[in-house]
Image (cartoon, rainbow, N blue to C red; front, top):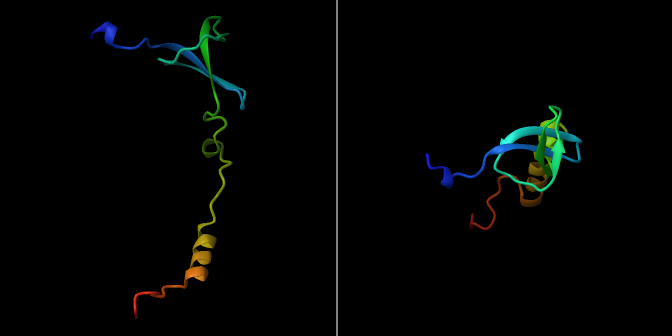
Length: 88
């Protein structure tokens, strides 16, 4: 494996500021900011807008789309199964 062709892969803390959540992982991401982690070591920290702690899909707070209501509205507007404009 050629060392000069691969990016630097190192421990990085990703911090979700909206949820107040941070996790330590390995990444090629870099940052000028650092944070002292629970183990006493200092790591670069990357602030992210959303993570699994604040994303609606993972938190269970996702909006449900009313597909039945949309289908009913479509059928009211355009007719239920009618062949409009095909000459018959």
